[in-house]
Amino acid sequence: MDDTLAHKGQREQLIEELRAKGITDEKILNAMRKIPRHLFFFDRSLEKFAYVDKAFPIESGQTISQPYTVALQTNLLSVEKNDKILEIGTGSGYQAAILGALGARVFTIERQQELYIRTKRLLASFHYPIMTYYGDGYKGLPQLAPFDKVILTAAAPYIPRTLLEQMKVGGILVAPIENGEQQEMIKITKISDTEFEQSRHGVCAFVPMLKGIC
Ligand code: SAH
Image (cartoon, rainbow, N blue to C red; front, side, top):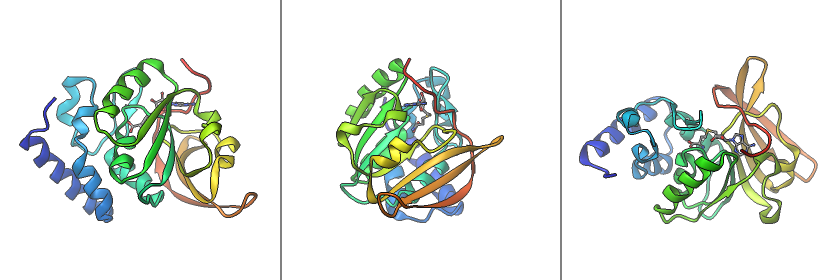
């Protein structure tokens, strides 16, 4: 699929919209300028909505996150070049590609095999250091820990302890956490092996983080 001038123009408009919504980090906006979001729409009939600031269904009942949400989570992670980042919920791969474009090394887990296979192929075409894994994100990747940053892109009922353990001291975890009927964006900084600092960053809407693989 091509990245046409029309796509690029639509992407510029989206970036201006994100700027107006408070995303001011030029590095993040540049990463979003670089990554053609329409390539992550497996359903071609939805491709025309690729540069609308909304989440959209992909396949297997999953979604591609809203661009604003991707920018917000990326911002909260304070991504630095060469950061080793664990992502739970590869989905379309869009968030992983944005982190890759920022120079991070990304390790991303997906529990749905079909989606995992499809996205693995797509992400490989970007030639960023993004490693894809098929498995249950609740377990993380103990063999590759510790990570500088952890990002959950599915809503968890609680913050899995295993993931906090797989973070470096000074590391940051960003996750949508269920809170009654709503979900809230949470940022956790690991102060020491036993101390964590938490801040809240508004309501959001993600598909649920489920246990096991399928
Ligand atoms: N990061 C994605 C958004 C993905 S939607 C993007 O940029 O498009 C959330 C994804 O999390 C879904 O694909 C879902 O299958 C996956 N998921 C849910 N629970 C999971 C778990 N326990 N481990 C790994 N992936 C999980």
